Amino acid sequence: MPPWDVSANSAVSDLASSGCELHSCTQILTINLEDYFQAGVFHRYISPRNWYRFESRLQKNTEDTLQLLSDHKTHATFFVLGWIADKYPELVRQICSAGHEIASRGFIHQPLLKLSPEARQEDLRRSKETLEDTIGQEVRGFRLSDGWLSRADLGFLDELMQAGYQYDSSLMPRHREFLSQPWRRFIHVHESGAGRIVEIPPSTMSVAGAWMPVAGGNYIRQFPTRMMNAVIERCQKNERAPFVMYFQVWELDDQQPRLNVISRMATVRHYRNLGKYRQLLPRFLKAARFTSIAEHSLLPSSPLAELSSTAFSDTSKRTMWRERQRGPSSVSPYIADPRQRSYRRPAVTLVIPCYNEEASLPYLHRTMQSLRHELSRSWDLKLLFVDDCSKDNTREVLASLFGNDPDVRIVSHYSNQGVSAGILTGIRASNTDVVASIDADCSYDPHELVRMLQLLTNDVAMVTASPYHPDGRVCNVPGWRLILSHTLSRLYRRLLGNSLSTWTSCFRVYRKQQIVDLDLKETGFLGTAELAAQLCLHGRKIVEHPATLEVRLFGFSKMKTVRTILAHLRLLTSVAAVKWRGSCGEENRS
Image (cartoon, rainbow, N blue to C red; front, side, top):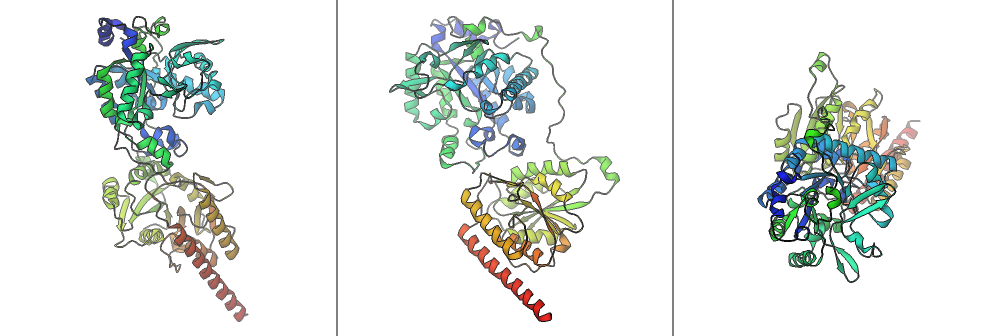
């Protein structure tokens, strides 16, 4: 029986027996179901293809939310990404089974309005179908996952109607927008040539001739509690329309991992007062009755009566539920195929130097599982971590995540020696002829190792990932860093007569025997440039692979900019002296 069936729903029955005008004393609660790393503030830095690398806190945050609602006998409308239903179908069914309404936020968290009309229709169709296949019930509502509708975007409501949605909650008039259409602030029916759709805007308040958002989310977290309590109470008393509130489940979680890629303002906006809803929500739910959009539409005199005119479909009478055969996750833990043991795969050791990388390691662990799975058909991947005398819990976390894996070794420096020293320690300690290295922060995508290994032919000493290659990319790195890197690269190219675009990358593949005999002295960030310069001086071949360099997500860079610039100038002088002595020696011999 659908959770919004009046005969089966105790919440609606309780409301119906109350003595007040139901629609004016019953408010609407909506909840956006998403994980912390899917929030819009991170779109620029985190691609959906990398979501699997993050520690998911969705299950716990959702269960905490469900418990809170259950304690206060409250139902809500959950706006859910199709991706979440595909990845966590049992969690979405759990929400539905608890009597809450499921609505759509699109398939993935993205700026949907920036896509082509064809791509938008595909996303709207796919998310609706995935959610319906998951819960076996019709999905009627929609809310944008990124941003709110403006006056110029109202045509999008036609697209929602074409995709089969019957209501939308993506319009929240703010400031002076829609002042010529003040009724847009409240629940209304939007009509066009495509038909009719009910619009359910989150609540706003009139202040000094403009409209201020007060419906929830970041607004309630940032402003003083007393002030917001008074504002919401005023809205509920003075407005005839129901108060429409919303929040994200991750806003209950003050223990979520901190990502250090966003601006200071965005950091305040996302992280300030996390967990505040754990105290605020019980107060709101005690002070007023809240229910879902679907249940509110069934109340006498509800402004959502348009929705109740078409009864929600009963799952026992519907044939739309097509429970798909769900295969394993697209990114699964590494499991060696027994058939692969019939031949010997070449081995490669991936060296990962670590210094105070405690925050990055869970992200790295999930990435390495995926990489090992992808490489497993062609290569036997060994991991060798070098703890460079970290001052945090890097060593303990490494042991916890990787300690029981026979293909993983962990070695330690007894004093901090620098990233290049860590790479050299790993190369010398490896038991394979082919060795690779990468930063622990995954600022380069480790999956590029698959293609880099293919470039390591017998005549190549080193393959290096190159964001400054004509086909490479740099994302979200400050402009001054790019100018510095390009300037240094030009100096190295001119001095050594080599067209190499990137000299300082830590993401490389080596032939061990071509490296261990080099007289390398630099141990810090400078060592990567020295190694490349030494290979050039010895006439050994370097191949570049175009790659994308992204800003680190966890922790902080250990590089000291001014010190590094001066060190590069010193190294350039040293290389020039070596080259000059070599040319003088050749002239003397001739």
